[in-house]
Length: 232
Image 1 (cartoon, rainbow, N blue to C red):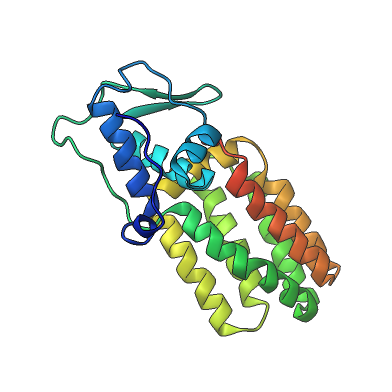
Image 2 (image 1 turned 135 degrees about the vertical axis):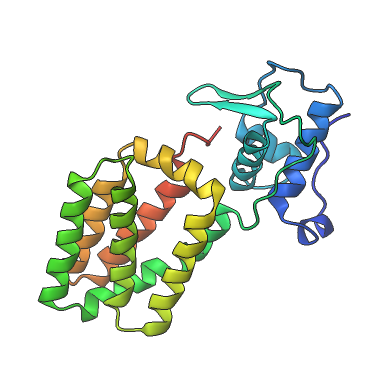
């Protein structure tokens, strides 16, 4: 059994990362990959299957959650024998993190730009206060996650558009319920990117510079998408 490129019509019948994960699971079950084997790099898998590297990341996370592989930071993904005995299939977890990130990439940079043109001095101080909370919080603690959420929601609130604010709150609800999100966000935070990037966003907004604010948020979301330990 070999890798099979995902057909265009198949990409619209099921969540793509599940389709990819199922194919990789079958390769494991059929002995193409054995316990201890290392999977090819993400870029190679993406090319073979005709999908994006983001889709490969989510598929790998689904496989890890289901016990088929172990992701070793800085090394790669390896087939494991720790698969749950209660089931032999793949655990599905609904909306993937990178779908959420894609939507955020459409909304949040423009929200930042709008906020930079409308924010008050008092609101700028509130954003700076939240940055202060992030700086004193344990990077792996719930308090950091709460401050992170508070900052993004506050930026949306200060753009003075209720629909945008509620959209960001809804996206954060999905994010907080995603198993994939919890896995990847922990790795992103370990790399120490979050605080500095959030500072740049707040600085640009405080300067009331919409273009700089837009770029700062885009850079933050780009890093969240591409600089994780799951970028295998």
